[in-house]
Length: 438
Image (cartoon, rainbow, N blue to C red; front, side):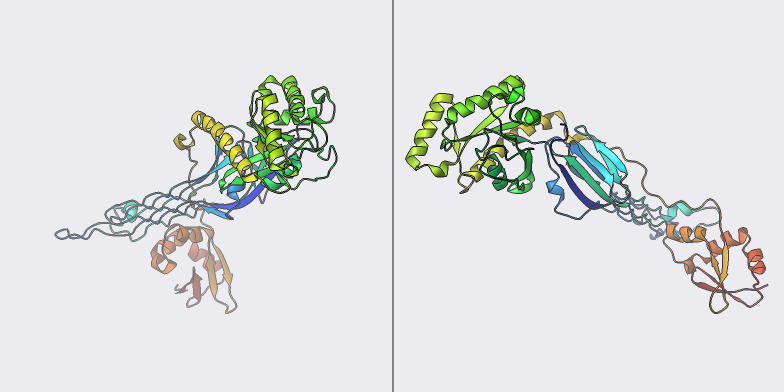
């Protein structure tokens, strides 16, 4: 029965930051003639990380946006000033989140431990400034590298939800009604015993998405549940993982049973099954308070407290009385339990190890393909040159000498002649027109 619970699914896009462009600038100062290149490098783009945070239990806070973007790197500046790298984007997810590539279904990571993290999008490498291209034959390089675009990805998060708070109590005390009113769950509700055959789980939000928790409506327990009667023992293990037990009683005694005796019956089952479970913090909720007059309600609460020593929070799931107070009471206790987990794993102090940023790599060889267009003119195409122009932030017309030198060293003239080029024919290279001369 380990499949108890439901899977929360969220998909969205992540975009890592682009690298900043390198600067192609020259030193310009009084009394310094012939100042050399002084362009700084661009900063790297920010990365996108997911990290398992034990203080959250749902993916609800990630449903507000369709795209999460890290910061771009800054461009390089004159005087050899490098641009600042973009800030990384850290998205927190509950422990147990499985991260997948939405398009391929590939599992990127299983964040099954507090503090475990993964990189889902790498930032782009910042471009180098023109100071890197100075040589004995080129004292004033006018080129600098373009920053590389950061990765963009469509990811899917899957989380098997486990409850933070478990509602326990006799059948038909109104647990399904309560969970339907305070959460996004829509359980089947009817006025007979054992309506609920599996736990209903719902996400409850208090004020803002970050303040969310999971509440489970555990199927009805009766005497002997820990011995296998009435379905309850199947699901007690699910409650065992909760931080808080919300014990629901019918404070009106509408079915002729004594609320205090109901409380003791259920407590006995919990204690028999697991002393650890029985020791968990508990809130006692008296449902169906709308069936009593104010005087009768006060008498029943007093009688219950005298018999059990427990305070009761009176509510009515049908009318809506006391539900906001119930949500806040549950949240305050869960928040305190999460603070203890924060002391064990401080997400703020994690040093995220980064993989290599995205780089533009030039092909291993210079490929040259010659075709003819509709006008009978020759066009020279080369993936190497296309990548070369992408790497350096210049249009082809400003890098003709470099492009021609690369192509000619790799046999451009011979290949043009073999393709049938004659003296005076028009040849196009990366949008620039040439006239072939023998």
